[in-house]
Image (cartoon, rainbow, N blue to C red):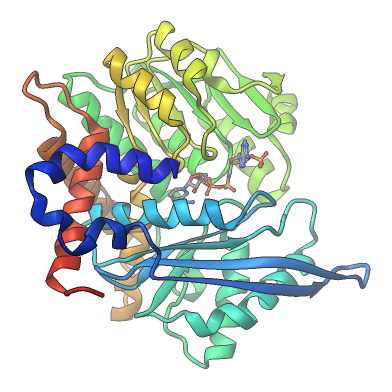
Length: 424
Ligand code: NDP
């Protein structure tokens, strides 16, 4: 409901001015997923106990291309969360300019604290059902929260065995079996490329700006790295337990420690704070640290109206979502009213799925592009998304509503494809 309210409120004046986009119950069709798959996943843990989880895949829209969107493993996963993510994904994928429909899936399985063997057996068990619903021209999943390179490897491996088909049915694969260079970096890098465009439009640049980042996973790590490349002063990272605040700022060496702890040793931000001697604030989110740019990169609804007001009082100029829907509706309203440049995840974090689209193209051509080639394409896609936001979001007073721009641009693309293909 929250995601639909945000999109429908934002596109409503456009639809009123162009009523042909609402003909034949188009809006009603757009908010209903084409197909929802829900299934039992049964696996055996290291103690020999049988465990039961729920698995899902929401195939929201194939209007523009095969369903495409990540798999999330987290105890909070339920159908409501996956339906919001699949709905958002449909517009995001439309914005990338690539031929990708929208979907999302996952399970309430919690990979934290599980052994490699348990994670592998769970992934294999999940695929014994999911494989029959996937295919390179049907539905192509990827990673999301709790699903990184390790999990994608186990899922894609089982897919190949069951389907007897080596076509790349997951993206975010390892380089040794068809992955793309720069896919791990793409969401975080793309978010910062988008911020660069937002700042440039205001005749500003990233160098020297104070930046806060929430989360410490895939998106957060590479958003921090790209912000460092551009000379920003990155002060925070976080997780569900609290925030590390470092007024000296991240350096490449500190980021390498964070990546090693999170990705190799599978530790936590608390461990990072201890190792580099930074302050860890338990139970606190990063939003009371005064910054110029805030990048929420953890999860949905992690930034509410009070947080928004604190950020505004601290002088924030730009808020760009690395995560999906991290700002709730009241927070977005507060930013828009205060004239803060706020950009929604469907525009800013689209670099991840765009690079997944590039991985699909490389797989189909049996080719691997260089890092520079992929980066060049990622940059031009983020630039095109920014242009679309300006086209539909620039107001007569020259203020840009990235919210309206992204929602209307994504909607026009999906709605046009739906109208041309008839009532389905
Ligand atoms: P990761 O699993 O790598 O990292 C998730 C981070 O968010 C961790 O720091 C985690 O902390 C924190 N987190 C998760 N759940 C909660 C919660 N309920 N409350 C507070 N913190 C939480 O995931 P990603 O970095 O891949 O994804 C982060 C966000 O970006 C998600 O919204 C995802 O949908 C979105 N996204 C990801 C893309 C990708 O390519 N990976 C593409 C586009 C969007 P902890 O360790 O304590 O759980």
